[in-house]
Image (cartoon, rainbow, N blue to C red):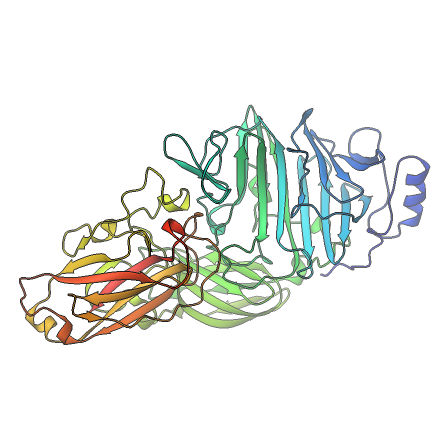
Length: 559
């Protein structure tokens, strides 16, 4: 059910002593003003609301701007670096901040223009539950960053740059002296791949458990920065709309909860994970835009026929207001996606990361929408087309191509990357592993693919397909054959306008380029190799790895 936005929480500020008593009398909503000298409770130190969870965690929230100004676990301060606090975006500025308590829950509410943000504490838990309700674009991005003091969780992971200050791109991609690269962008993970992100050291774990991302954008395969570590300190992120490499318009509304969780070194409890976490205790807190479990529905499918069992299948739901997803069972394709807001959705089935089927479903509160067995038409999966040869497979990602895995956690210039140049011979057995995952106008344009045709094949026209997963600066492939025939320059498909290939992401909009090649383009001598040349063309981009480029899904020549 929807909580009333007009709850008294958000209109009053409470302090210790007589002010707290007065606040209790004045607060008629679900959260009553309260304070405690010890154990679970909250107090007012003049500049901050101080919350003691009654476990091992005490935190403070600024009464001026809603920043998290202190995060003390077992007596150690974890919050802050560079004079900065933890907060929404880079800090909201002057805001209305209020607090209240209802039984075992304390809620701090922050209002900044049309944006509302919430911190909740539960008695006996070392967790902080956060919600953010962004109503419009008045705040430029949607993220929360937990800033962590330097020296507490040192590491040399791909998203760390603790041990280097030499930049190789912009001011956020770094190179170590051994040639390895580091950047906060190099998370390795898609949204679907993780429930929590953080660090563990010295018997303490500090984590952000992500929300279900129902108001985020980009779908289950979106990649974004998740954390960073440097000599100045570390950061943990919950990013809902970053404006980088986005494939969808921004969604507005209440997102959460996401959770700041402390542990004794282990992973946070799975009870906090999206899809598992239940928050019936928050149903009556007056959180703006909140919809409890009873106001949500579910979509369940009997199964998916026509699958390629070598790949995982994911079912996504999306409309302009919300997005959800769930895995299809490997044995039969059964799926269930719960916690869905009522409305009409596009249901999409993904083979790997490639959309191969879509339909429409309507979700009602408190009900399950049942979907009969979905049969993926063979024509929807490009892999079913009869090909003379194929490099890679059609799965919506460059997986298996040269350097593909490394590129989710390293810069293309990284010393660990195999040479981006080199030609490909069909029949060698290394066609896919020799073919670079990415092609750039200024790096490896002009890639050559050698192949033979039978006399019958050479006597006919054929279609060549190149599937891509994203592009930078309108980079797209133009092909030529044997130095005698050249294709026209294809129009660029819609792709994100920001960096992608150099900041750990190949995720954009999957697109297939098709080229009709006449029989006259082939060599008639069946003992000779035909030579396919693939160039990257664009009028945009700069130089090197920031020249126009594209990521490859598959390349094939149809029979």
